[in-house]
Image 1: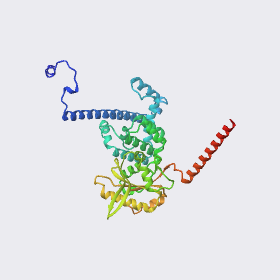
Image 2 (image 1 turned 30 degrees about the vertical axis):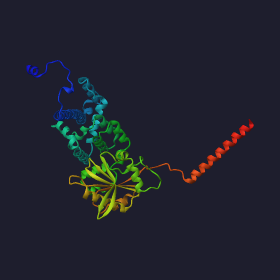
Image 3 (image 1 turned 45 degrees about the horizontal axis):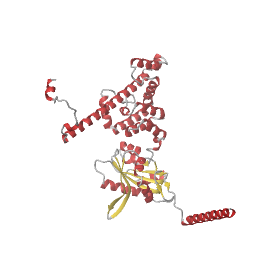
Image 4 (image 1 turned 90 degrees about the horizontal axis):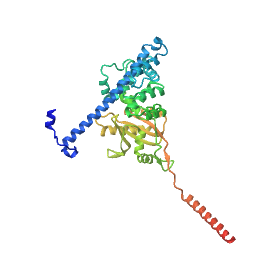
Length: 408
């Protein structure tokens, strides 16, 4: 204590920021302190959520494996709820309904034949590979605990999803594949519970990942699955409008590029817009890519070609050329292969699949809808008719006014 007194200025004063000399070294140090504190907050939240979810999983497992209702009677879940509430009066989550959810949660992911459980294990491994950096801290916190193995232990990616989200997924999803899809979406986009419910109500699972493609033939399994999850089979361009019902690609592209924010929202999370009409000069000839994107999570370029017409086989060859050009001119060794995306007004799936044969670049074909038509200006004939009508109305009004005056 004496050392502190000797080193401190004991004169009464109010400490202000200008009482010290703040230099670049101080600014760097205090920024580092703030970063460490935020990191500690995140780690604490992750640890608490992971531990609670692990507890819920293990309690659900106990109720199943111990055959609690057969062993102790039909009311055993209610009794467990009462015992836990009595022991931990200030803790939440021990209601009877919550305990039933824990049991259903465990059963949902672990009951089934060996083939189904093997597939669940593969899907969960894909999730772990996707979110390794996020799961690193969870893995440390749960070190020593058994994780997911043979469909029976706690799946590590589940720790990144809040309990109430798990309940909504369990309550609303019909299959494990669908449930894991929404778990991945929640982790990827940080979905709130309301946002998650909206995604499920909109049946995003059925509408996403169904794009006609050749990804499985030309990409590693993990990358192929990720690309299929990112790209849609149909895009809603309701935010864009064109002048006439019959429009071409240039007008469609212009309408989309005038609403880049809406376009990126419709494309989905992770897309960065790099530009339109990107010029390629090869052999002295100039060609232009309609839209060029980069996807941050996929770590690859996405070449997007727009067609205001139904799919034609020659479109695949042109897109293949652009994908190869971007691979040669832009892609680095660290990045994944460039993806080709053709968006057209309609398509025949058989035509698309046949067109992909012999093409070695990863490509997909999607459709779009809901383009708006702007209110057209009246033609000269229509304007002339309106002028004539106005003149007649004025003449009639004047005649009536004169008639009224003559009666007066």
